[in-house]
Structure formats: structure tokens, C-alpha cells
Image (cartoon, rainbow, N blue to C red; front, side, top):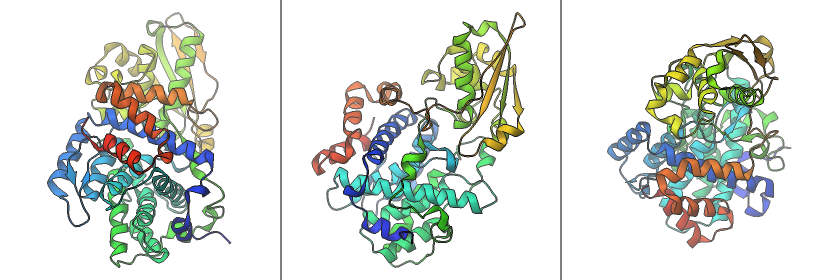
Length: 445
């Protein structure tokens, strides 16, 4: 019989966590903070912080500091502002089988609660909460995708994982954990992902409300509010059969080398490889064909006007790679959106909706790219899926390089080095050391 998820959440111990899981959680901590650093400079993050400060004053639950800002609000306000901040740059960890993201909701919520508890937290405790949050989120997400006709944002299933993990952090009983998950699932934002693909805006992936919804659910359950069952946890048993023995967090977590939608990544990688393999420069390119799965073609974005449109585009990021050979912090500046060379290549890019790639893009995302040159040649890539998936993982060095590219210009090298050092071994930190990591993550940049 599968282990009930509430028993899993109530009884999980640090010694139960396999090394592969801890390695994944450490990488996600570092990677999320790197993304948060550059994202904290965006207009979207600034608006979210102002909203939290205006609406979510600290109450009896205590004051929590806003991620990389330091302003004091309620834990719900800190979770909201922090999740919107991380989500402002589409470079955080991802899960292709769930077609979404967990870390962008999980970390802001758990950091906020850790900051409000009336006792010290150790790294080992935080690792247990993270493991619960990721594992429940991923499995709830799989269940939701299998049972709901619409494609909902990550906020809709991370709210369940966050609720469950926060309930554990608050020391709730198994019965209360069940209710917390049910409240979080019911009130989680069932927002339509393809709406934000078709009409990019600051709504993003729904985690800005998924994180605070889950956190609120746990606090309500503590006070006696009922909500069980969470249907994705209790009525889709096929996704929970190996809970506690198998780890979807290890199997399904991937990392992004580029700050844009994962669906564009195989095309970016393919274009980069073709440019290098054939010694091409962007002046050689007269046209680009991207053959990929249906939803990816809806990214479009030949002439993005905002960072939101850039994040949910495919033609423009591919053109960035062709012209500049990278998609990094510099490419997130407004000037990039008006670069004539990138716009020339982007507007000469055709997106081809391929039935075969649509059929096989389940759990992985596929594309191929053809470059056409001024002298009439054509170069076509092999079909490929994104780097950073578990079959093509980014190395620890690549995760570190990405972290510093994003964080050093914002935090300074000294603070970035200390965050990297502590986050990459966070589960081994005692209460004093983990408090230092909290201070680094929650203080102003």
C-alpha cells in the first residue's frame, strides 16, 4: 500500500534523504538564489515588493523579510513578493514532466516561514521541508495534468506542495497536514498557462499566488480550518505509489542555461551548435526554420517589446544566440529588444508546428533548426531536447558559472561567494550557520 502523503510529510527525517536528492536540493538552492539576484532588479519584482509592503503587514504570525530586500511583512507577503521576484526572470529550476517549476514557489515560502519561527532552524530541517515541498508539488502536478483538461500554471500545484511542507514546518499533525494540502489545492490559482504564453505579462507562472496560497493554507489548518482531501494527492494513486522510496525531485528536476522559456531551449542549443560547427556569423544568416511541438510555436515573439514577451518567445532568443553567441544578463536589458541585428534574424525566423514533435514532447521537449545562408546553403540540426535535462545535465561548474553571471553584478562577488558556499552545503549547516544564510538571502542587495 502506498505511504499516505500526510504520513510521509509528518515522519520524513533527514536521514531518509538520499545523497542524490540532497545534491539536487543544494543545486536548486544555489540556482534559485542566482536567478533571484538578477530578478530582484526587475520592475516586476519592485511592483510585487511594493504591493506586499502596502497590503501584508506583519501580524501575530511574526514578521518575515522579503527576499533580497529586507522589508518586513507577514510571511504571506514575503512568500508572494519572493515568488514573483524569482519568477520575474525565467531561469529557475524546472520539471518538464509537470511542464512547470517548483523552486520559484517553494524557496520563497519556506524562507519566509523560517524567518518567522520562534526558534532556530537548522539546515537539515530545511532540507526535509524542501524535500516534502518538491516531492508533493511534483506528484500533485503530474496528477493534475493527467486529470484536468486545461493546462494550469505551476502555482496551481505548488500551492499543494507548499501547504504540505509548511504544515510540517509548523509541527502540524497528520490530520492537519491533510487539511492543509486540501486547502492549498482548492484555493491554489488554477490559472491558464497558455493565456500567458499567448499574451505575455507579469502574470507569469502563477507561483506569485501559489506560494502564499499554500502558506496560508497551512496556517489556516493550524487554526482548525478543514479542506481535506486534496484530490491530486488522494484520488490519483498511481502517482504516489513509490512515495518515500522513489524521488521525482531527482528524476525530474532540470536546470536552465538560458533565462527564457524552457520550450525555446532545444532550438537555442541547436542554433548555437550549427553556428559553431559551420563557422557561421550572423551576417551569413538569411533565414531560420524552427520545427518544434505545437505549444512552443505559440511562443512566437519575433519582436518582443517587454521582458515578459522576451521570456515567452522563441524566435527572438534563438536570434540572440545567433547574433551574440549567448543569452545572459546583457540580453535582459531593454537595449537588446531593439538590437537591429537580432531583430533582422528574428523576423526572418519561421516557426513550424510539427505533429511528430508534438506527439513525442511528453516529459521532454523536442525541436530541430535549419539555418539558411546568404550563399544558398542550408544546415539542419539533429532533433534535440534541451541541455539541463537529467539526460544532459549541467555540471556543477556550469551551475556555479550561471549563478555568478546572474548574482555578482547585483550582490557583489563577496556576498555571492558566501551565498554559493552556504547554499551548496545548506543541509549540513547548524542553526547559527543557517541563520547566516537566511540573513544573506533576505537582506537588501
